[in-house]
Length: 487
Image (cartoon, rainbow, N blue to C red):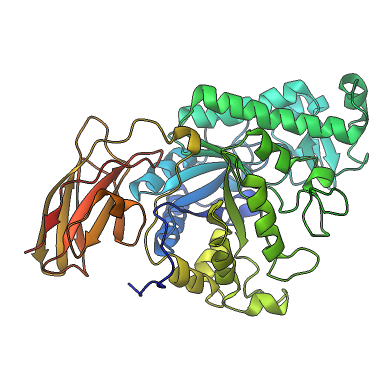
């Protein structure tokens, strides 16, 4: 491993995620109509990318347009699987994806678009059994697409039911919303009849719409906590809440405002404690007018400070090396510089990269640069503050650490009833004390859990001391195992 900068202590816990998009076949499946085996092979290849880039989590879009990547009783099979909405792909993509993700010791966050119904405007092209066909009053056209009407209480409940079906039936690590809520702040999205029915007591249309989105977010939290409290619930909004010119609490920017244009009070959700994490998409370069990454990072850090909402940053891997982008995005070190700036803000506990293809292709080496600069050590995913005091996993046993051809083989054995999700393996040049496990300076591997695991450290040598720590699905850690000195 490369030497770490002397003044930098690598964190034990850091979100390192990437988004795998399914809408219009952006990432997976790469095109509609692939066989089940072809789709499976593609997904496994995306997991290989995540492992190669030293990530620990994937955010997979499983409900891109009011449809499903699992056999849902609420909405039809997604057209992005077979090319035909409602057609069974011949296997359970979500079940397969979750299982394969966990086999590699990665976390699986299920990514949902809450309101989008179709990327085209004709309701007649929806599957005959689609809820939008059965309840035409639920959907509204705008901008060449169809949307569920967020102002209808029955729509809000239905969308939650559809998403909770996946959460309760599958072994998922997180429920994740993207940045799309209301598509516009104009009356061209014609919900006037709904506003007339339900808008009493609100001073204007925008305030009522914002309240509808607030209800979706708050109720989603309540349903997650009731049904699956061990999973993470969060949102990745567009990066500007409001500009300072609109609101003194806003950021020193002059771009599109989620509070106004999408009716998404992203700052309010954090301050009210409605999310486990927020991952604003800060898709701008450092110094960029009218939205400067280096101004938005401290702004969001201040928003998250003193709350129990974790802050992860959405990074624009898709802009790096794109010839259509500004000169700053042609510099291989731009994204790495973002992560360097993040280090100055302890409220930030990681990043999510958009999207998987750009993480894979790495056009100008920007991802490699960021990985080499910042991911030299492995990292566990963060623990949600509300779960931090839960029961930790049992302390494992380190059966041996023996020199063999190819390095030092370590064998860890789980204790207790529950199989660990991961084992974290530490290597020291001396006997370690309990405080030595608080950071990743001596963390050499995070491996998928089992009753027992064997792992070979190619850099291990005589005299090294090894320890293992068990990690559960909430990323809580056990006490370190017994130490083992290589002789």
